[in-house]
Length: 126
Image 1: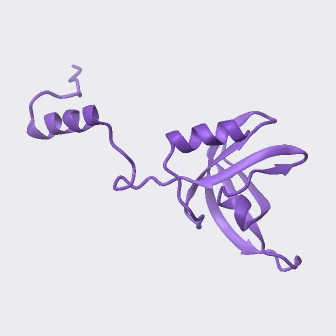
Image 2 (image 1 turned 30 degrees about the vertical axis):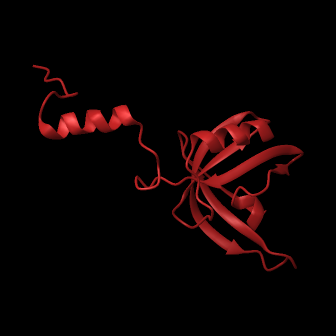
């Protein structure tokens, strides 16, 4: 799992915090999965002495699945790989902001070509 997380951090722009409305990437070893979920709620678990949170998630699957996981701050912000039912899990919010995400050079050139009206990636079908 540690190697997978290292590879994900090279491929995905992550946020340092997790808030309601964020999209999180969830990786699990068993069952093996890599899935996005929408954070729908974050509520303090007042039954515990330490800082634990009820994290409401909607898995972006077909059909969507609503779950609530009880996690510590380090677990829901990707600072810690944790286990559920003895199986390793990783959760971290994805940063979809275009200002932060790197854009490859060839993509910039393609965008400039489209904006200038020279060439198009759209094809008219009659």
